[in-house]
View: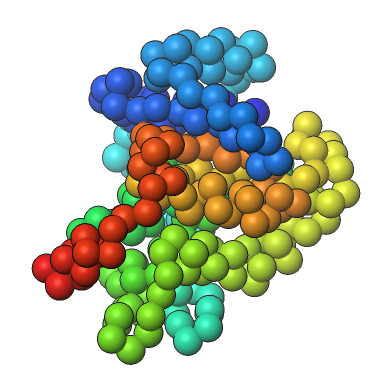
Length: 246
């Protein structure tokens, strides 16, 4: 249900449906299901229609948008030597307090951080708890610690995964531990974990999170992921050094 509603939010926001691919992966399965967006959009729309009303608004009014913005807060947590790692948090809608959370993994690039997901978070009404972490080295404008490579080495994607895992352990799991492990909460959400959504080239972070945390992560959604070959082929050391010294 959460996967279909989240995907519907993506599709209403996107100007060009053909920009996206969808991959749904069960953490304990080796089966990868790739479908084009046009087909997925049709199927998910039917699923949403048959399951009842959903309150995702594509173009809220200015006054509504201002109110939605106020529902998203910037919060902090610690991980290893990083004393200020940040994330965006949207409180659950009334009646969804015990629903399984959604974790949004933003892409990485110049100036990118969790703000990438703000429109999705704003436009998703009747939402469960939503967390959008700033990956290590991102979110400086939110007050996050900067990453200084000469002082602190990191491994990618592992270090980003470990940063998100610290958020899950310190914040997400304690708040909803009973929902995860006790079964149905009365809203049709069955215990067993939450949904992780990873955008673009950060697909390896989502995949590694799911693989390392099968009891916490119930479903994984990848949008515009790289090819399987690109994900599984190591980048040559010479290329890494060239990029680092650019």
